[in-house]
View 1: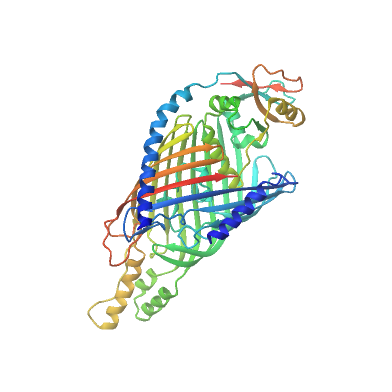
View 2: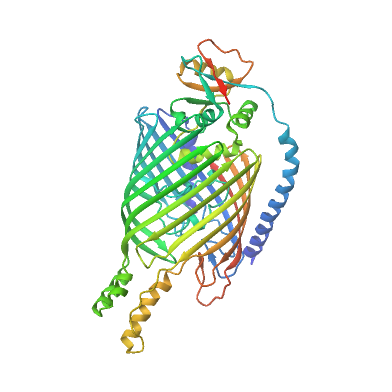
Length: 154
Length: 397
């Protein structure tokens, strides 16, 4: 008897969750619109100083596509404002969709997510020693001469 | 069993707190705790009934990978379910394979692999990887086997605006599968599959096909076949064959942008065995992203076509023949198909980058003359309409 009462309660909790989260959705909307608008540049360790990549190619490099084995993508940690900006403008996917996608790739042995560093300083250090490593950085970052800033093609 | 799960859980968590990469070793895993309740007395649906039940879908998966060098690695993945008796499968080794990556475009896996039949087949237990609590079961819980022994090769190439991957696999498998309400031993050889994937902008198209030769271990049916042969009812005998080829076709689309997503998939499974019905199923999902929440609505349907009954046995002539005719008809009646329509409304909340909380309500509407994935006791009348409530936590580590 206790058990069926519990299930009754759980059933109502689920319905209540759907209802309250639907309400939350309206309030979070305001927060979501308050996104960062800083400029992002794409930097690669390559001898080709005229390297140009399309938005689609950058997306495929970061999402385990054919080019991801040629170029090594580098990420900032989840939640970093620059990463959110990069996901929004270049990858075109939400962080949760990206995380879900990498869970799929990892546990089916298809490919691995980009390496992560906690600061742009560490990223630059990694780029300098790793050929074909790719990273996004704030537009005002001082880029060492050995690295190439990629021209974005439409 | 729960105690064992807890011990494994503690082991995984402690392993995980070792340096993430000791040498070239990499440990990772996934876990899910799912509670469910079916709004109907005396009926069972995928292990759920009218009491809160956490067993059918809760599980822990653990993966270990060792990278020998840039070209070679070995991976093992084990799965521990809280309830191994359910239709969803058993605890055990899911993957054990060598990966060879000779060029940047080609990847070859050899060993025990999950079958990549449909879009989510090879990661259907990794709940964190999809928006629902369980993938639409009309497509993902049909009479298919989960693993095979063999080889899988993926070739990828791309251009400025598209990315293509072609995957092929070959292998064999034996074990047990459920056909309608009964379980049977099976063997599959010459399993061949091809998958093509095309990514353009935010859309992914996936089309696949597989073929295999199957043999079911159904001794009682084989005995009945011999009797029918002795009576010269050769057509009826032939229709009870437990060996033949099987094939499946699949087509899927996934569209994602920052605000919305759409997913659709259609599959058809057909075999040369008359006792296995032809199944066609699909689902359509629309969703809305409002970080950290994802709202989704899914319609799924399955249609099953029973193969024509080849009963040549005259009835009313004598008792022996009447019994034989009855036995023959019951074979087809027992493999009664699973036709079911569902509407599912759910929310996923990404609490952390590796943790999601989900709730879901499904309205189920089955075909009244079939099992429709339900387990219905003989003395219970049930109109095949009910609701399923699920709540769960998905975690990757």
